[in-house]
Length: 426
Figure 1 (cartoon, one colour):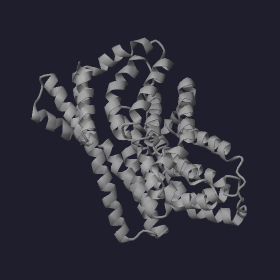
Figure 2 (cartoon, helix red, strand yellow):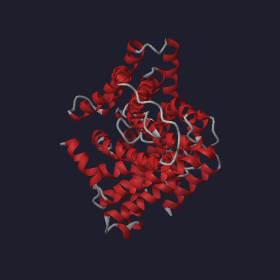
Figure 3 (cartoon, rainbow, N blue to C red):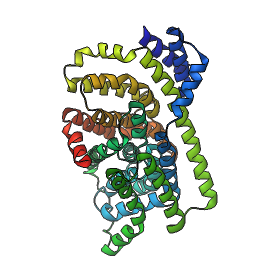
């Protein structure tokens, strides 16, 4: 009955068109009423405490870093490096998109920001080269969702706070899985474009490659600073976010000199607006999280999933299918905040490594950003690329299925995640 009250009130509020943050508060009030605990003071207190977290300061700074990189020329130079290295091979612009997606992911952590940058920079080039607009846009959308997997990842920050799991360990454990998702796109693009008879651009000279690498060196140093700093305990993930934002601003303003004072102001405003949306979502969701614990919903979920508890693999498959279904109707952040407090007790009861689960959970939620009808990244690519949503969706499907296949491969072979994570952490 408690689960029915929670889900019924949440889904009912969403069906009425109430924004997800307010729908979460509605479901929290419904639970309080059901448990005979309703008290407006408790609701307000938990709402304030939900956002009162030092760790969550990483969110605005990583968002700010991503905005600065796109406006300040760092993203453009990353794409130029990829063009210099593989732009001359058959289907090279697709490989450029994948390499650039992985490199940009190591800079910003925001799927929407990366997808917008990739689409603005590469989609016109891919269309001029003769690639289908729908397929090209689909690849760029699928590449954009690598951002929440490769550190620094805003998704890992939110999950780490909600699940009380080390964000540093999540960051380091996400490196190889993110690259494997990129590899799945690489293979899919090769398979789809192998029969295309398009003219191949001339190979860049060694001098041009060196020039592109030299111009992007300042941008490429940033992920190394973050990863080395986290690996050796120089700074926390929150401090790493501040380092990323300050470094990006310094490079954009002092080195590349492509950002003006007016642009800096608009970038700060844009990052602040996005931060406000995310933080209100987090605060509202953590109110529901507290009530979910009080109502013992996790224990009820453990009872429901009892048939799968004997096999960690079967349980992970069941959870991944559940998250896939939720991801088609809900955005990444609310999905993380709603499902984490419900699923984490189940995961711990089954003896599954929380970091391993966190990586697979975030991968699934990231892919959810390109699953219709809600797909935020699909909408971003459609808007920036001026292409119909249906066309982006059609072009994206082969890449989405390849990413899901890679995700389930990690479920079947956990060592793909755990072995590299141990190497990075030791």
